[in-house]
Length: 366
Image (cartoon, rainbow, N blue to C red; front, top):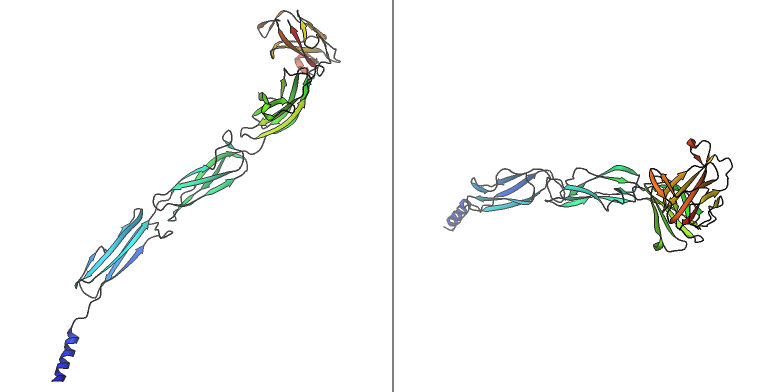
């Protein structure tokens, strides 16, 4: 009897169903992988569900799901339930960024002058990326050579690994100063004559200050182009300092300095009468020393720095008149301070061959 009962128990145990296992879910993600877990191309998700039972209910476990739009994180999930209600669950999170950053280029500072940079700069690129964000951008220092329309290119890279197309930064660069040479000054009666040679300059500045004065006391007495300038209304016997500065379009400068002491005798050794700063009541006879080999002379008369007469006598004297016409305009020798200047001419007057300025002197009509 006991043996029969034991056999029955063994048979019953062999016929009882075993406990079932949950469905097995696996996932395969296909796409171009970028950096930091990002994908940079279309993504396909394939689910696989296996189970020992014939009937399984799947939710969200379609064979493939295509992700083609940028996303900072999209979760796809699969749930499988067996016929005996045992179930399994799996999910996957996809971050997709297929779009390269939008990039702009600039410099670390504005141009120095005239649309030019005249000392080293750094070109920088900055980007915007709405999905994965910016990881890095190009930064390029530049210190030459000089040129116009210089083009540097740079890019930005996002965190997913997308790199933008090269973006140009175009600019002008000139770090070469103009050339300033032969800066000279000659004393004059109550004035000074400056001369220089400049190349590559777009502007010449002449600053004057009493010798030994502070820079704040400097005054600009000339601003323009040319190779010389005559300063007037100075004090004889007083020393003056000049700074001549050549400036180019890019703001580069070259400077030199000279000093001078005006004197009544500095430029009047050839002039005889009237005496310097003479006070007269009628038009004077201008007289000067005869110059060897001079065929004629050029006498110019100025009032308030403006030329009002130019004549070419052949003798070493010229009589001024009360009224005359110059360049179609009538002038009168009224009460004022006048300055006259003298040059010697050689050969025929049409050749316009003149020597250096022989002198300049003032007189007053009261």
